[in-house]
Length: 76
Image (cartoon, rainbow, N blue to C red):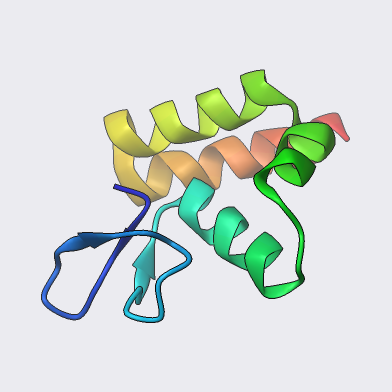
């Protein structure tokens, strides 16, 4: 799940109840807050990078996401 509420239940990252986010959920929420669509995320990061971000989160958790983002930062 891309976001969770106070009771740790999965919710949309666009929900006002969302409090905890995975990397993708945080990007989705940030785009939403700025009036941008999910399409914007694909245009900026491309689908492969977003898929790798989600996989890093699902397989390795927070530390893996941070490592992935650090690696991505070096490539830019």
